[in-house]
Image (tube, one colour):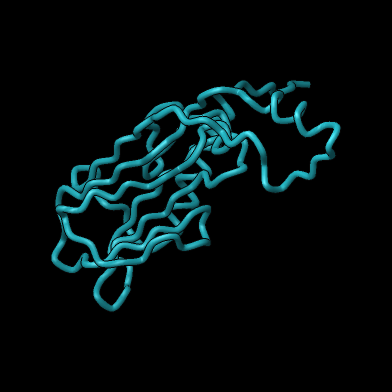
Amino acid sequence: MQVWVGTEIDAMKYTCLVLVLFFLQDDVPFKPLDEFEIKLNFEFKDRPRVSPNRVYTDRTAGENERSQGTGPLPYLYLNLRVLKQKPEEVRIRISINGNKTVLNKKFDANTVLKLDLGFTDDIKDRVGPYEYNIFFLTKDKDSVSKVIVYFDEDGTYFVNGQLRGKL
C-alpha cells in the first residue's frame, strides 16, 4: 500500500492550481501584465494599545495596556498604476475578499491608486482583507478586464495567479 505524504511545496502547487482554475471560470479576462504596475510599500506603525472591543476592569487596565505595547509592526500599502489604459476602461471597482466593494469611481492612466492593506500579520491571520479584485469597467459599468491580488496564509502573494513574492 502506497501512502502519499504531502509537503509544503505540494500544498502551494495545489493552492496555485485551485486559484488558477477558480479565476479561469470567470469570463472577464486578466489585464495583461505589461498594462499595469503593482508595488508593495511597507511602513512601520504602532498598533493601538487599547482595543475599543475590550472591556477592562480598574484593577487590570494598566497591566493589559503595558502587555499590548508591541512596538512598531509592518504595515502594508499597495500602489497600483495603470500603464496602458484601453479606451473603454473609464471606471475602476475594487472589492475585498470577493464581495465587499471598497472603491468604485472614474479613473485615468495618470492616477496611482494607493490601497491601505493593513498590518501584515492581520493579512496572514485572515483578520483583515487578503484578496483584492480590481475590475476595469466601461462607462456602463461592464467589466473589461481585472487584476486579482491574493495573499496566502504564509504571506505568499499572487497577482493574477502568478507568484510575486512573500511578505
